[in-house]
Amino acid sequence: MRSLLSTLRQFWSGSRSRAGNVAIIFAIAIVPIVGSIGAAVDYSMANSNRSSMQKALDATALALAKLMPLSQAQLDTKGWEIFTASLGTLKVNLPKSGLVITTPTVGKIHLVATGYYTPQISGMVGANNFPVAATSEVQWGMKKLELALALDNTGSMSSNNKMTELKKAAKNLLTTLQKSAMKDGDVKVSIIPFHREVRVDTSVYPYSGSWLKWDEWENSNQTCTGNWWNQTCTPKDKKTWNGCLADRDQPNDASDNAPAGNANKFPAKQCSYSLATLMPLNYGWTALANKIDSMQPDGNTNVSIGLAWAWHSLTTGEPLTEAAAPANDLSKYIILMTDGENTQNRWTSNSNSIDARTAATCTAVKAAGIKIYTIRVIDGDATLLRNCASDPSMYFDVQTASQLSAVFNSIGATLAQLHLSQ
Image (cartoon, rainbow, N blue to C red; front, side, top):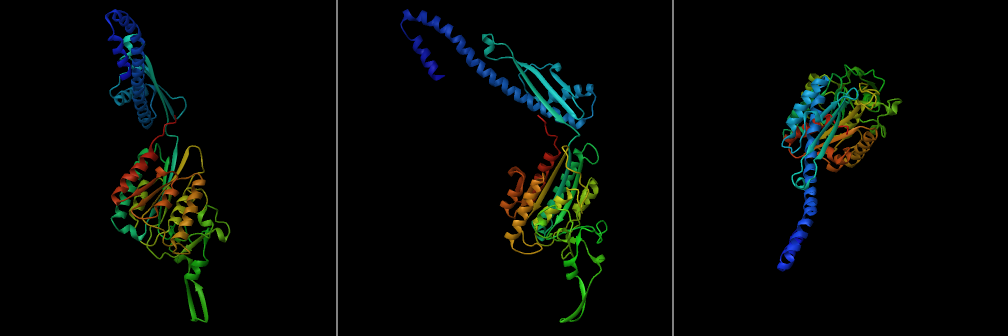
């Protein structure tokens, strides 16, 4: 532009004899120049207005989806109200007839907005109005969600107010998900408290379960008589089992293989630390909140087993059979939260060895089509958890326990949101 002005000055600054001709030439030449510049500016402004229209239309689609089912008359009225309220300042002529809302199939809303942008600059040289349009489509009440919360209940969760903040954040998440469900059963949640082990409610999962493995439990829970060189030992009654479970034999500890054959079964363990029992998938929101409230910090860290049992809760095989089979209208997610590095599993206290089992489980879960969010609270192996997440954006590094609510709220909003299909 500066070069153009300099050239024009040179044309004007010549002798009087050239001035008349130059003026005529300039007058003729300036029309297409101004028109070109004006068209570019107007096009940019029109495109900016179209972007604003698109955002308003997307917001309208999501808002209408949450109100469905609505009649066509209600869609037209509410849609126009929401759309115009979302537009803000817009330099587009958009009549009410320019917003067309249809429901092409059950559970789907399609919106088209068409208007005209009046050129602000190129209009001076006869440019016509620019058509501006946006489309949006959203599905409502069609996508179901199964979510497993694998929550660290180890002793370190007692420090820095972590357990208190976790309970608050997790219950807020439940509230968000409950409100997002169109009908009962659209959203189901399981809760898997873990430390070195996990624990089931023996009134629901009794000792007689065929999926249980008892050899190690019997060796550790027996009554012996006689001298050490000549003892007679009798295992205790299995009814005294208090519900804890250790890692399965490798490599089944990092799989969802059916518990067929002793090597694939789940080893019973007598709980050596306090631990809340897990809750399988359900939509009893009060019971889920009560389960979160029952959690108490104790024991050492074994992230692998928490993740593995969250996975089991999302599949149809024993011992947790409440999940639905995979389907196009069903999403399955895990939120894995821990505040420390792996310190103990069934075999070892070597963190590197346990990390390898955690990594193997992460890989297997993602290969099964289940998406993972990971949350590190102050401490823990950041690389392990970041790599475990399905996407870098699904890993959260929390530096203070009070940040947990914001993280869970963010995840909850994402899971609850009705995603645009186009």
